[in-house]
Image 1 (spheres, one colour):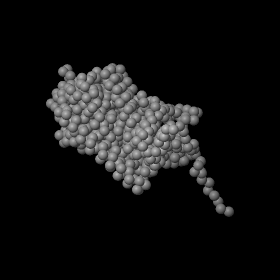
Image 2 (cartoon, rainbow over the protein chains, first blue to last red):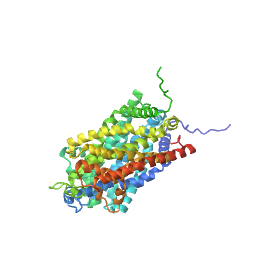
Image 3 (tube, each protein chain N blue to C red):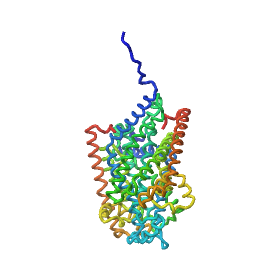
Length: 290
Length: 284
């Protein structure tokens, strides 16, 4: 008689099967990403062209003879408005990509009519959002790296020049916040069934309050108080200090502490919001609607 | 008994009916998502606020003197508001034509819609009608908010400015036809439209006077007829220093319109025939 080795069936939920589901979702996203080669254009062109609008506006505002530059330097602590803008806008672009990518994850499934059926699979539902986010994290990191080299080549600004270790530390501390915001945002999109508007609103709030393209000191007090609640404010300030003014760990420690705090709180809040949305969607049967 | 042509008979009235039906469909889509409708007015303010604060951070005791060197006016808020309004029409046409086409591809209805005896231009133009109307309403809202929040003011003749806007808009439609052809070929719209919309707005000087561009980039701005449209409208409305005398700029816009509309449509028809031959209309 033949002896059979009992292996867990593929359909049986286990840690390995959850991991398989996660990786499958990540691979699916990678296949879609490669299918539309216009991402190459997007990755090459956007980091370069996006800051141009603000840079040329700043150039026009400073005047032919640079007569208004002193006013800017007084507030920003540097006359290098190109470097100042490039650092702020690179961080903003990163957040923007995450909002579109992670935020649209569930919405795209909802639009294609596959969200409900995917959620019936015996897998950890969060992996439906997390799996593709892993791919998106890899692609957005590639975007950032390309941006850094483009700024070096085209604007002569070496963003990581001050202290590469500190720059990486800032990025590492801000990643959980950015993806936490992305997850929370993706859940809200499912709730309100409207993604574009939500992206514009959330990224708009960050653009206005975090000083991406101007010194925070110019903002009225109430706006500065709002800025203090946003992780990107600290990341941009620390990044500018390191890249443009050669700040040390001690100089940016308060900003790093705040980033660490946000890194703990925001992902948890994002996950809680995801679970809340999931329960609500099941109760109201709104998953299949769009 | 009065003989009326049957509904299926192709006439100019049937084309107009199709155009209206497409615009009505877009209107339903628009009001179905009320957040979107409200946000269309708020969105430009979100874009303008950082530019406003950027301008404030360059302000000296004597005002925005640096900016006045280039533009002939220190009122950079009005300068940018007018630019933002005009560039919203670029977006309307490009997104209206290109993105709507891509949406129909994704929903799988492009092929079946195109089997109806409605001319293609009615599909393309129809998809922008609602968008242009919403953009115009949105611009009125922006002007109101700009007046309330940023002291926006107009000193020139609005009617004259609208007359300049008309050929610019028609020429944009020509550009939009050609653009829709590219979307048909590439079957991708987002990046294409985003980049084109941004670059066109950037180099036409929607955010700053093109004279502030580095010498190597200035020829690109000067080669774009839209630059003269932006420049002429600003010259009329807020009395900025124009690149050329305003009548010359209007002539350039009229020529642009006469060339762009037929050229764009011919390119679209050529690409459409190619897609029909290859059978790629149903793909996305």
